[in-house]
Image (cartoon, rainbow, N blue to C red):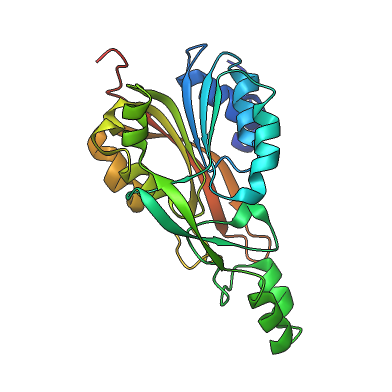
Length: 252
């Protein structure tokens, strides 16, 4: 094994070697995995999955119509890709969804927090007066109703008995996505999900919010694959975490 002058140099080199692709391929070894992309947005993660596993079967879920055209364009380049223009939640039917003029990537079932102290953009605006803040408030948290599905019902409808990789990026709605799997959570092999700690949205998450759901089904934390730092104060805004189901067996 190579010797390094310091732990930091070893860490820096390992971070270059073990990127998200290599880490996920270590735990998802099948050449044709079944992947659920919840919060598919414009298809960036879809393109990554198809580059890493060309024979994968990818089911995308995205309720924000502003993303659909680009998502469909990306999906058209790949085989075995299925787009569902809906959210995932505990209850099937219709749920509230909030969109924002500043970015299609920020839409979700949780409102942006107008009183956020962690938002770089909001802190810049606060120095420009109340009128500027009020104008900004009119561009965010625009409500609409979107259709919602449960993952366990979707699996039954499509005769799917397991999921190799479940990716979740839903701006604080991740616990509800996990709860929508019900008893079938034991048939999910790997979960990669975002955890937001900062107060940009009215709801933030902690490890306990998802581990209360994951741990009883046999999942253990495998890796923290990305850490996003706040340049204003150095605190961690959000992370991507990978959980591995040690009891997973697709043949049962």
